[in-house]
Length: 615
Image (cartoon, rainbow, N blue to C red; front, top):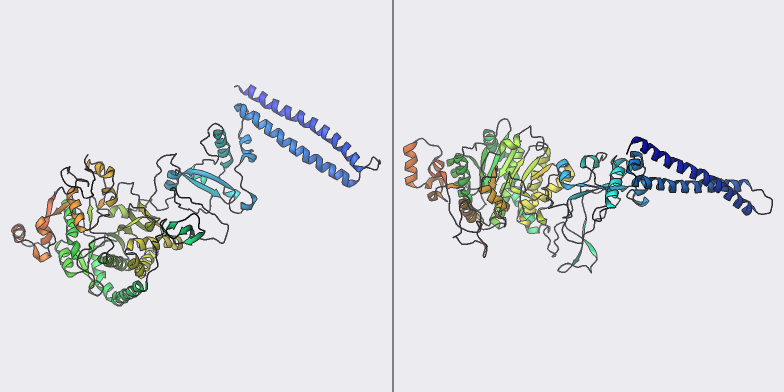
């Protein structure tokens, strides 16, 4: 349509409104005056001052009402005639804005939605994002609630108008306007982020205008066997499950007494340990990044430690930053024979069993967890960055440069970064951080975190997991001290582990074996015990330790292997590594239902009834 016809249309609307207003005012004044004379009574024909004041007020009220009706009619005509629509008509549609009552105007005046993926890209809250399946899954948007008009996006009215236009033709769309994330938070001087459950539970969120809290209270209708909708709501712990089991019971007196005894030894030995440890740490720290790679091992896990070293040697990776905290003298000797620096703290580690844990969470496992907390706290107290990793690990690339990269603006703002555990269970909420691989930047916040974790040893003892205790404390330190935590999502490729290995779909591992993944490391977590870890690593083609050297001490190298290295190099300082490390991996089939470099269809399943990984 031409500009002339557009102007004509606008003039027509203005003329209609003008004529209607003149007619309306003439009729209104005449009618009201006649009415007021009747109301004045007495037959005097004259009204009082109050009568005329009431008349003028009534006229103004009726005029405003009629004007609003005419505006709505004009806007309706504009909608039917798109050419007549202008930016002013959009910004004036105040009557169509999402309404909040006056009773919430101090904390809620407007609402918008924005893409969850875009929100996480803009605001990295540190947790691994639960990736939405699609727009219809019901969890693909973030709701933004605005507390004041000044916080509303400048495009709020425009976006809402356009959304409501869309709603008139689509029954599935929402009346809440969709806004770009940058625009959506542009006027927010404060942004409180609430991470909430999004499964099928009957959940309500209550936002209460009150003295501000930085924690969420959790209320549930609990019966004797779990959720019971007939019961009253009651305050529960963050670890309460729907079946009534609480994963955060307070430590017992036995746990507290045991922790006090451990702490007594630790603090008594601390000055001596720091003096002995300082030169070792200085000798392995990267330059100029000042990073120390901390590993903890007893002799029961020694073959996993050896395999880490051997796989790294097969790829010519620099592992000179590693300091092994050996919990027994056999492991110290072995680590040194592998070419690593090692430290044995007799005062604190003498009571730790040298055998491997039979399973996750048993007392030997818990004892090692406490040792891991002590070692990180020691190195942190000396003022170094730390890469902590378990021994059930292989490197494909040295990950330290990734964390030390000062040009990586996305990462350098974080104090501590973790591999995603993968199992997003309630006890690990909200971070699901894997405590077997993480990087810590030295600063006051991280020093205090690991000091606090050490002192919370009774919680580790009561939960049989330093992972659970660490995440609980970390969540509090994020709130209280602004600790900046990052967990690399299980849906990313860089830091895979047991979650990916044991996936029912086998999606990640199949792509891995095709060469379509390029990770830094692989962490054989989520595995019952050391024996299974060894078998799984062999299936992956990541086992580089000679079979004659498995579970051997440094002075127990088989004579034929020892003779061979002496013939090659009589002055070796790393005899175990030279004799026992293989350049090519041992690849064996053990279980058909677990990932394998080569098809293992003829092997039995480890989990009854499971099909072959290679269909």
